[in-house]
Length: 452
Image (cartoon, rainbow, N blue to C red; front, side):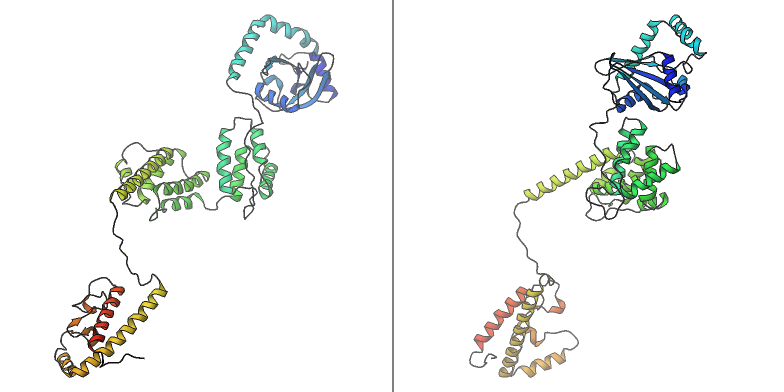
């Protein structure tokens, strides 16, 4: 196909020849997607559209008419393009009126090609093609098959099954958007295909109001609609007033701070270069002061500022080391005696039973004491002694059995409950009262009858 044929093709379709060129492919089994990918690699400037396609069965070639959004003279397109593993070569043909050399239709068809060939020479064209091949050899051609798609996001609450919440979806999108080495149009396509419902409506409205929007504009619009409503100042205040809780691991506290920092970065409230410095500063202020890992970090405060990965790695290694050290110390200390502490609030049922037993024993011992005092004639003497010594505390009849004084708090003999400094021991009190009760019963057999 010559330039005149390309120009006639443009006139037939009523297309401006200054914005068109023809691509001659050496085979017929090309799809429109493959053609767009080839043009994105060879001519990254501008955007092209396929306006026509002709297949020649005799020569087994395909001619494609491409229209660009700019003048083709500004594209700096090479005359031949080599692609594919087989080394196929395609040729670019400019129409007569829109050729890079300019001129009239008749002069362009004859003179400019001769001028180019005589001035530059075929060796220069070959060398230029080799140079372009070396430059594009390092980057593999874009392949839209095999990439991991983003999970669906609709913005509905509660989050439907199979979808991500906003924060998880946004974090994943921000990461992959920086890693995708593809044209901007494909980035927008991949983001748009993961949106559903209200999220898709947000992007649709954005495209209506802004024609040349980018993939980052998509994410910014979703951030405005579904993101957190706090501004950067509120998030900074929350970040500076987030402290490590009692029993919380330092690594968990650091991860909590990092989530807030990510939201601050989305709101553009902090310079990304200062993130590590601000994180370490808040950890030193908000962590528990007696945390052993925190003490080590304070000792390294004047050294180089650690990044997030370095910081979390060092903290987790130190936590694992302390955990192993604690388990070794616990195993080497040997078996320990089991100490049982009776807690009044441990079991309401057991406490009720013990109180009932204690009350019954107290009533029985009170009756035994009164009976014993009445038979021996010592009741009046004890009352006189108690009234004569009213200036200091003395034993009560309920605590005294002959010459033995029992403490109703700890069960020990020789002191009273009001002066007891020992820990409560209800079991021992019951045992002591039971022993004294049995002893009194043996002494007073025949003189006292048990209550029916």
